[in-house]
Amino acid sequence: MVGVLAIQGDFQAHLRVLERLGVSAQEVRNPIDLNGVTHLIIPGGESTTIRKVAQANGLWSMLKGFKGPVMGTCMGSILMARKILSPDSDGWGMIDMTIRRNAYGRQISSFTALGKLSFSDKAFEMIFIRAPKITSFNEKLESVAWLNDEVTGVRSGNKLALTFHPELSGNNALHKYFLELS
Image (cartoon, rainbow, N blue to C red; front, side, top):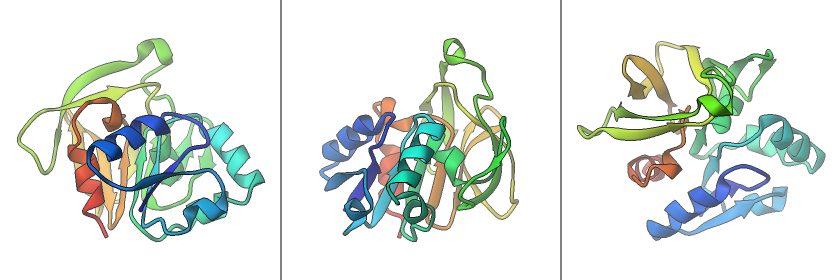
């Protein structure tokens, strides 16, 4: 069962992708919602809101310590990082990287571009909405996505962090890749 954090943000788009793939999924809003979840998606959204709600209802530490595969998109990648910049804070440390919030600018600076994935020869549409940038990462991590020469996705074991929104692209390749992680 795939759980999609559904406190705030674009969780419904991820649920639609999973439905198209024929995968059982459920919204995660409270600790009990993690029962039976093997894979977890942390969608884009507002990290401050997610943090406040998840800490208040006891979900925060369970998300931080989730042992199964995790895919974080946009804001989700911020939470998964070891270090967060602008403003500076600590993330969950799931992935040994430093990430800068809103690195491309404000909402009006959002954009779509064609990037590449490590496991495909086809261009992949990447949608950046107030997106973060990976500013540094452990050289042992696997780079899985790029926009030009800039790394936009990394993998550490069964953890996958993407600075863009694959769920909005109409291309299910990254969700399929994530579902194969164990």
